[in-house]
Length: 396
Image (cartoon, rainbow, N blue to C red; front, side):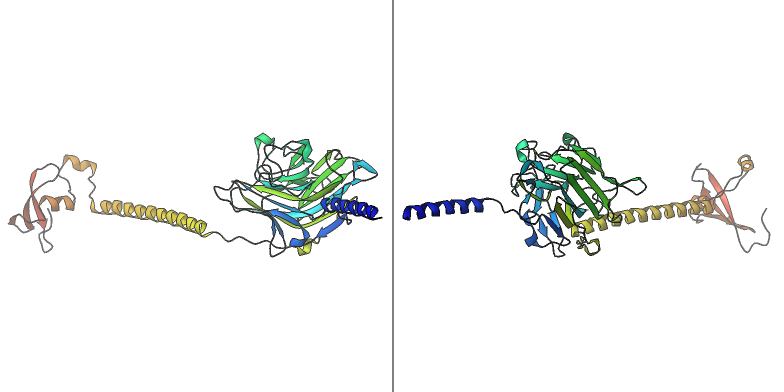
């Protein structure tokens, strides 16, 4: 009897250890977060829930020695993606979320973020740059990753075959997308409108997978267009059954390097084998409007000061040049052409200089005083008569 009890106890302990070592699987396959709490998610890296209850994946803070940052946020328990009776087929699922990307610098930012389905929440070996916090140089492309993702990429990488620096892509075990398209949406009239992912615009995304049809659809639209467009941005036939395990985590991943951005998720809903619940777009959390750093303010002030100083110097130079030219014009005497062959006028300044200020007097007459002088240009000695204002004889 004691032996049987011991065997039963060992069996029970073994079963308990197996249960504890297995990841918890949620019995609720549908959820919705109009705002987040840290307890709602499994967070790692630079991911955090800010005071307004928005999810921030990356904070945009980098140093020269920083190899790059990544942030991860997952629903805390796994979801069942395959029916135990038919483990070869992945169930249908859908998700929708609202995101906003804020550039750390006005000129550029990066690298992007993904919605991801993964077998684990541990991405400690992943790189935070072009690998978006999912992979590294060693495992990028490995079939053993069992990772499916939809990327929202804001940096073009030629080695990854990116179409541009503003695209949406479908990734399987690698950041080299199976399918991608420049970010855009289709209006009710079928017109294609471009969407700039990192324009600090709130954007809504819909990702839907049909397990029966083996079809993936990805759609985006700015929040000013709250209804889901009738036409998807990406519609791609793919069988995710070989990729996804029976139990998987769902969430988000983001990465930055030299080009830093802040990636925010404002609301999120998900459903297995059904339509993701509607989001309350009227009560989305706000995100902080960054204050300009002191060094950036000083740099801006210095640039404006230098520009205004240069403009002021130019204006002063123009005014002085105009004043000098005008003074020369007023004080100069223009010699007429006919005067060149006859006695002609001399500028008063030239006579003043030639007579040394009318100081060397030669004599006086009825008209006025005669002075001795030397013309500055020709060095010719002359006599200059300075007519007196009191002269009653006039000029001859």
